[in-house]
Length: 172
Image (cartoon, rainbow, N blue to C red; front, side, top):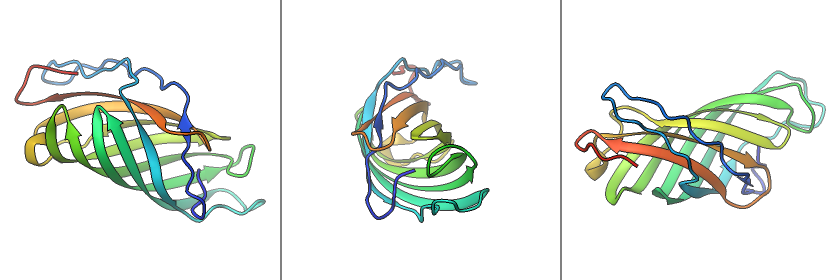
């Protein structure tokens, strides 16, 4: 995971395609992506010291800038488990929530993404989905899911994000 003292921008490898999932309403919320990019603006986390005993649990606060299907900014809180593995950070898993403010599909408001991911060596993989009922403003009724694969220290991260609104049959 990036170092708090030097906010890096883990960059993308090509994001894995999100699998198409049918929602309870019958909409397909899948994307073959990439649908955009995001960049870490800040990453605040105490890094494990080389040789520090695992397992280890940590909290990270990040801010992100999104372009593409999501156009806006995000503020995220992640709880991470660091386990044994190669490299300084080893391998681990994380969960988090990110409040995103901006536009999706030409509509403005905010919503919360739930993140579930893992990391090993310098690769981070995560799935994310819109928390039901979290969207505000013109984004009310937003449903969506996607994913990303990032490599530590490389530019912007490509992501997938399939979405629909409860008041429309249209989807992305």
